[in-house]
Image 1 (cartoon, rainbow, N blue to C red):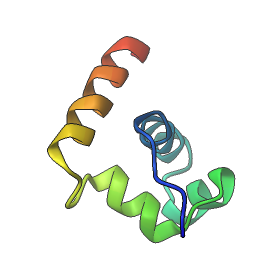
Image 2: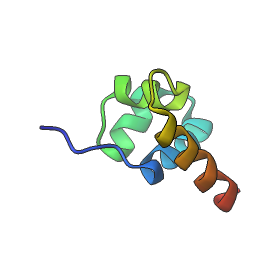
Image 3: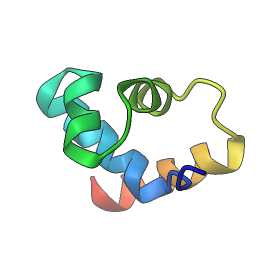
Amino acid sequence: MAKRVTPEEIVEMHRLYSKYGNYAEVGRQIGRSGSTVSKYVQMKNVPRNIRIAVENLSQKVG
């Protein structure tokens, strides 16, 4: 079974996507599939509690 994606990892996906602009490249960098990266960068079907955690982390980082 795949390891759960953490809010910290999602923040990193967003950061790397801003740098590379490519889901597959971000996936290679962090060891996830491009489709997983796409889901979390676009925040499609991501549970509300995870979206809130990512927003909170992003505010602390940014």
